[in-house]
Image (cartoon, rainbow, N blue to C red; front, top):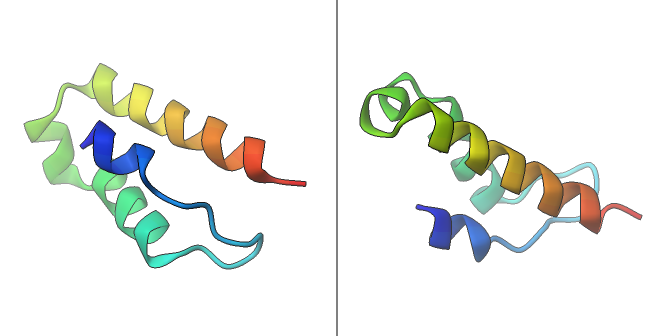
Length: 57
């Protein structure tokens, strides 16, 4: 999952891409918490936030 998240291209500000929406669903899904350790989910969220914040002008 982390390798897939790393390949997400950042969409222009204001309109999330389909890939970003899917990644957000992965991270917020109640099923993800059952399949993936909560600490790893939190690290993935932080990773995505860093990527998206770095891409902002």
